[in-house]
Length: 500
Image 1 (cartoon, rainbow, N blue to C red):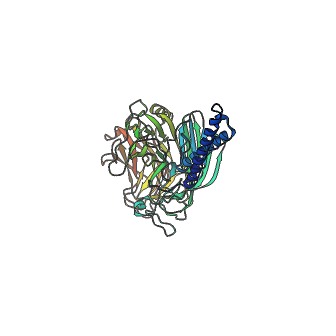
Image 2 (image 1 turned 90 degrees about the vertical axis):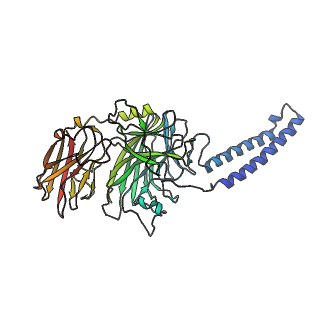
Image 3 (image 1 turned 180 degrees about the vertical axis):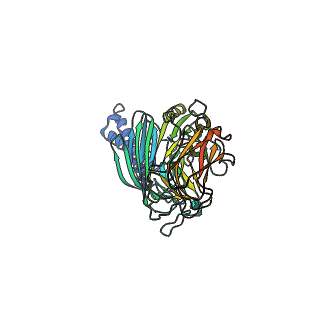
């Protein structure tokens, strides 16, 4: 989400007036100083008239400089902000974070203590912010249709504002010095001044050099259609041009000290690429391996890259580095969706050390008590939100599929998969596929078929993966085809899926 912003700051005329006044006053002060020094060369700096005019001169200079800085969205020295920002900050001895209450409470400032802002604020599609996606594609509202460039975006409320410079609105804000909270009505990015039928909430805390965040979408759409799951930005993070190196660990031996590597190169005109960061982090760094590290506990799917030319740390510059934690999620019309993330301000080693504190000590397991646990469907749908004790999935289309979130485990350590499910179907077999690290999708050989009991009762299906010769290496995803094909009235209920 990038666009050009070419507007004349509103304070420019006032700055020009003060600058002229400062120039005139400065000239008058110099004349008085010269006249007084001619009378007594040793005392001209103490002449009251001269002191007054010099004081006024310097005051006007300071005021005009501040106004010029504000006009360009930059405070004096290092505190760079968007124009007219209304800030709320948290800080400690190591970092400082700030949200803009005039831009939906998005994070517009993040820096080391007494350091420069690292967040890019070129337009309302940058910042560190929340952004969600669903159907229809394209999304239209109140007679508005997006321009062709944004048709593919679909339903996309974002925290800061829309592509027409209309900022999102704050509904609530609190800051007790420990937790910074905002509640926002977001704007639909591709449309002009169309609020989303939802609210965003954000809770921020800082711990050392780590920004800890919890975020929530509260949906209330009048369109109750269950659209297909889409990739979400969890969150979207844009940094300045000095942080132009995109690094992550993408190997199959996470948390073993193996070297990090650059993110994959973009494959087309689009500057972003996707990858699996198997240590749950990705980073935007400078040439000294220092910058911002995004940590997404429990998630390893990332997108990101760098657009433009590496350069200075300009918060309003167009060149930018981008990262987003990714998850393919079904966003119901009434869903409450919550996720957490962290951002480390520091070195590559410090980022990796923090990510290691989130290393899971257990095998992947998904219990569907009250949410989908990151799973989504193709050619299938469920009973909708809220989830109550299990997934209830309608099997009424050809080749219905359930697809897991990404993970990374060794096949040697995951010899069995257990599925607890109940069926209503004339079919008597289901198929499990697995995807290995480096594969774009499961191959035809990466599968096992197992019998099912379609008596409407829950059964525990134990799949012996160790017995499958194609089950080896690092496993990164599962796909469950609960039946070969569906028909009206068929369903499956799933309580849990877990490795043992």
